[in-house]
Length: 87
View (cartoon, rainbow, N blue to C red):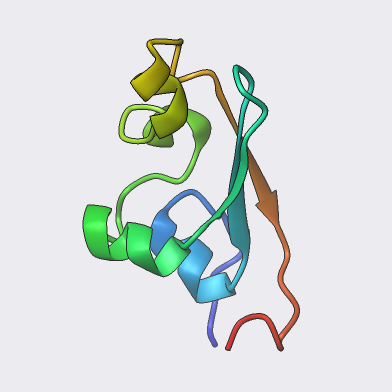
């Protein structure tokens, strides 16, 4: 894998390329979900940003939305995955 330096992980495609993960926590209901980066790339495209303000416009907490609570009080967390988890 060839990368230019400094490497900036600011798109879903770069996140998929490097093999890192992304999780989201809802601050309203305390729900925690590990996101499927490949599914996000399939849905939004590899050039879509993966930073907070890029994702908060397209993701929301469904249980909070269904209950009429604020549904975009989300916090995103990047994390490393081991080679075994990347398969």
